[in-house]
Amino acid sequence: MPSESASLSSILSSDFEKILASWLKAQAREGVKRTDLVSAKETEKQSRDFLIAFGRATRDAPTDDKFDFANPSWDPVREALEEITESRTQRGVSPTEMGWFIASIKLPLFEQMRVAFAENNARLLENVWNTTRVVDQLALHAVESLVQKREAIIERQRAEMTEVSAPVVKIWDRIVTVPLIGTLDSFRAQTVMENLLDAIVQWEAEIAIIDITGVSTVDTLVAQHLLKTAAAVKLMGAECVICGISPKIAQTIVNLGVDLPNVTTRIDLQSGLAYAFERLGVTTKG
Amino acid sequence: MTDESWTVALVRQSDVAFARQVAMKAMTAIGASAIKKTKFVTAVSEIARNAVIYGHGGAITFRVVGIGLHRSVVGECTDRGPGIADMQLALKDGYTTGSGLGLGLSGARRLVDRFDIISSAESGTTVTLESAAR
Image 1: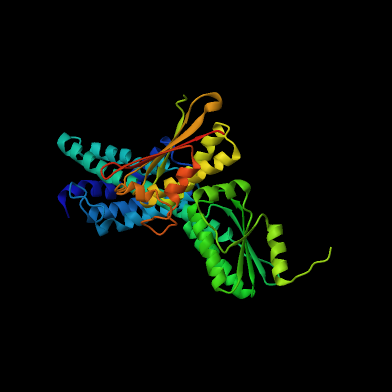
Image 2: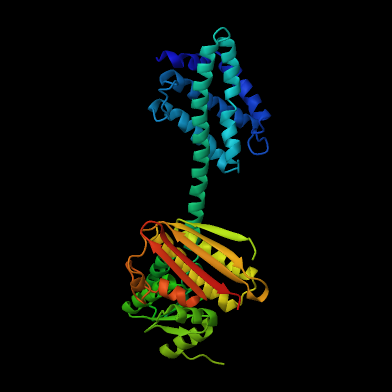
């Protein structure tokens, strides 16, 4: 057992209940005890679990200048922190509140140290400094983990959006259509192509209509994706019709110098459908 | 001349979409026509994507210059890339070092009223795009 860390760990074990009570009070004072978001009982349980893990880690691993958060002894502390951030991310706790939640443990620890090292200022200062380093690292980790969890949520939502934004619809016998909305990046373009080709096989379609009315910008990348999709549709033995090209997008495409050879285009979905009917020999009354 | 400006950091592909939105906002601010807006936004899309793909990322800043009916939006895109070795070749239709159509630079030049490009191996590439309201 490293002698330097003995003080932090011995304080945590001998005055555990006192520190916990004082920490909960400090949390309330710093305004991070969000009773509207997290119940008092839950906060107490989380604080207790964290403090137990913290006490064990300070006993098993050095907390002086040899402190290394990567040491496996800190794994249970990391897990406890993950659990706390997990439950708090979902409730909208801010990164600052999360940081303060951990950092507010300093005061109760310093209070105990002041008593323990009342006679030795040098020892007191040394312990305060070591504790600050360790607690700051934990608080930063908590904030980091909170941000990571939020990023994971954003990533998941992005994936969900991609999924719902490319529905291929069978609008007539042997005719499928896909309305494109928003931006068409490489990832979405790939999804659209896969969905469209699958639909052609599934419904034995001979005409695939891509409606780009909802696409705000057609740049060279979007044009390239459309050309690739049209080429793939052709390889499947079907024909691709692109409709919904507005006058301003038509002019922009010409200025860009993009050529759309071998691709049938129509002004809107209605004329696209009319073209498809004509090709397939479908007649409608009225 | 107003001192209002908007800067968009270009790191990921999704930043290009945000740059387009900001470009649209700037063009709306000067009361640009629909066709001018579409052309400028498309040019920004090309240049911003180049900065992300070939330029190791960078930033694009939009400013409104001029007064009254002669207002225009200036977009200045800088990247941290290796620069363009042969400018004449890079501005040629259909030339690409990547997998695109090779129309981004030349196409963007045709879509705006002013197009300047400065490039060096030390300071990367800076593209300036300007489009008037009408």
